[in-house]
Length: 186
Image (cartoon, rainbow, N blue to C red; front, side):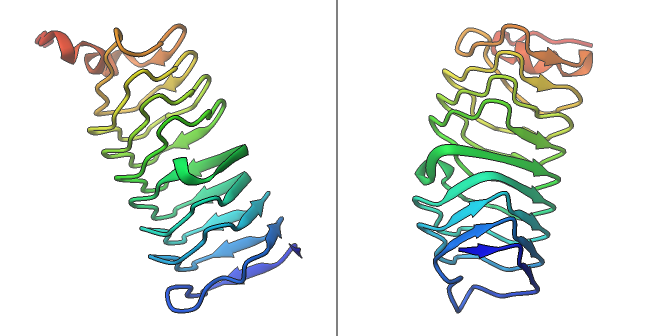
């Protein structure tokens, strides 16, 4: 187990991050693009300004992990170890990533770019999408009860195919709930 370590400016594109349990570690400005992070364990870690694009995260554990200003394009989070899965995303780019079928209650996606992210069949009760761009994000059979979409933009959510009870939307964002009906609002 690796405890309380700081990793700065590391490139794991050619060399692999040693397989271990990382607890309370900080990774800053590290490049994991196209790397193999499968079967890793990250517990209470923080990733700042890191690139995870197209990394293999199969069977990886993310327990209480915070990602800030990270580039995370094309990740398949549904292949992670979902036991105790919990992460927070702040100002991250998660375009083309997938969370298909995951239970993600109380997760935060604050001011993130979530273009074409797949949230199909997710349990996102009480999730926070505040200030995020959800252009072409997929919500189908998704539980969004009590989710916060304040100041979110470009979302397109069909109220008939998703659970939205007590979800929070700003007035400007309501058009994203009406697109299915081809209503024009001026």
